[in-house]
Image 1 (tube, one colour):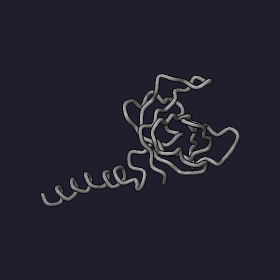
Image 2: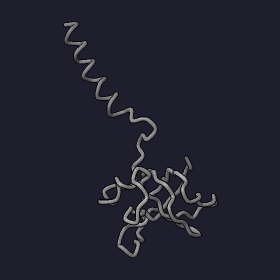
Image 3: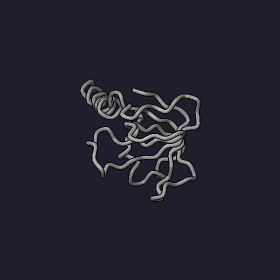
Image 4: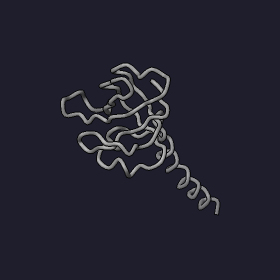
Length: 118
């Protein structure tokens, strides 16, 4: 009986260790994660990336894991808060949701309610 309980405990703990402890990115999606089906992610989500373009109240982020290239996907985000938009090259975590607005390419724009520069 003791052996069965030990095996059962191991079967419960091991998946938690592998799935629940992914380090510094808990719950943070990458730009690549949302690129192909952004509207599959509903409600408030957090996306991590590197600032690649910026304007007055919007900026674009790319997946920092992908080398800079003319073909890298650029996620356009809008931020209307008081905090200055992060500098180009800054690694950020953005929290918000998809807006009803779309880019010229038809991709939804991500509305940022808060962000953290990392």
